[in-house]
Image (tube, rainbow, N blue to C red):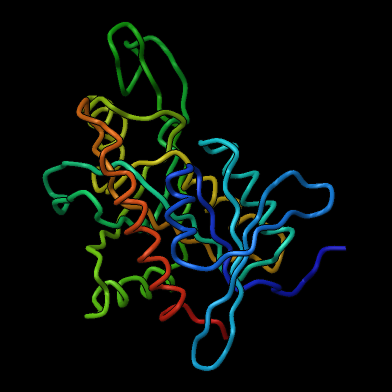
Length: 259
């Protein structure tokens, strides 16, 4: 029988070892497993206004949307969190009309979308063409709850906040983008206000919005570690993972409602 009550306040997700190590820095964690489940979990608590709130975390076994959806659904089913928050790293954009981004800037999407969904066809019949290959996009979109976006906006403007925060769409796909042509033709041609790219966000939000009740409210908090071009490197991944975890902690310890 499915539990119809929330049992955990916050569920956190990471996809890489770098993100996991950064998150572990912010709390004293207890590591555990559930019977019959190979997934490793971590749990801790935090205090606010004299009350104690619970956190559980799970790291994906691999990167990508499939693993993200599976891990998110497992967290939702087993722990029934009020919020499910993915923290980590993402690629930034360098686009006219989009606010300038720097390494470590936090991106919190109000919309996540799967830019890789579509159909490969002849370039003569395509909206997007790569030489002799055409692509007809069939992108899908999922919105983060508007009330949460407003809370993020307030938190981002707080004098206590030390992070530079961008709020805008995040594109999600199955591959790392290291070519600005892909950014231009595949992503910004469909949604030119896109503020970041990753490989998991759409699956996490989709899982939360389509879970059985009580559904968690989803948030994605990721920081810019590189840009969608040929200059990609791992140099700023640890820094970006740290700022993402820091802002997420700021949100759930001070701003997210637990009524």
